[in-house]
Amino acid sequence: MEDFATYILEEKELSGKMVIANKLSKKVGIFFDKSIVLKAEIAKLFIEYMELDVDENEVLTAMLLCNCKKVENAQKMGKLETYAKEGAEYLSTLGFSKHFCKICEEVNRYSQSTPREKESDILEIVDQFTGLILNRVERDAFTTDEALVMLKERNLKYTDNRYLKLFEAFINELENITIKDVIEVPVIQKLVHLHNKEANVMAYISVLSTTYEDKISNAIMQNINKRTKEMLSTNIEENNQSEKSNVEKMKELVASESKKSNRALFSGDTAKKILNHQLKFKLEDEE
Image 1 (cartoon, helix red, strand yellow):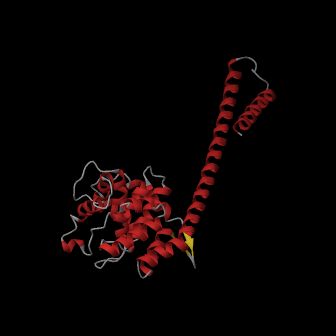
Image 2 (cartoon, rainbow, N blue to C red):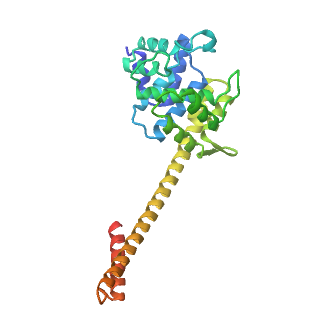
Image 3 (cartoon, rainbow, N blue to C red):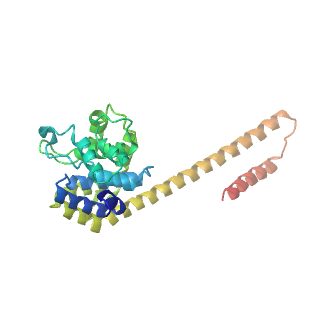
């Protein structure tokens, strides 16, 4: 009989993984709530949109399970510094590899595990950011802009998280990508709204997988296509400017040679034909 690790890793759909993790939480009492679903969604978008060189299946599974031994009010319960390591130890009993468990242990830095895995930096930054954009008992949620400032200036200020700048660029980019229900809403804002609106974990998973997964994917693809066209347009303009620059250099060369001799190297008409031919040839060649 296959172990739990094999079972959830072989499930490739994120929504399917979420359902499996939720069932495990009901059965054995591990921590799994709507915030974990949101973290996994953001991690998935980050990995895919920024084309990170990691095993997406492994990272998303780790994102769903790395907080498995977390408790409500972990700071008050004295678990803040130990739950990640305890979670990693528990996951090892479910058949997960040492590498996978190490990734999960390094969701925070209390165990001082080194060297850190690059996958752990993804878990860390998504975990921290998502915590900031959600309401807590002691404070209201931060906006995405405020959360990024908090990440840079407080939470991760003295760390060497390799994805910090890339994640900031990703969130800023995502703020310009909207999905439409009644009005246009940025993707992150919509995900948070659904988190706050849906009554429980399964309702949140269901609405994401059946209604918003395609909407978000389509919005992102439209943005990518738009950006691609903008880049191509910019490159064409730069090439045109380069060609103009080459023409100007040719003109300067002709003028310079004319001054060096008693007569022009080429007549004015001939020079123009050469320059026009040069430009036409290059454009056709590039096409």
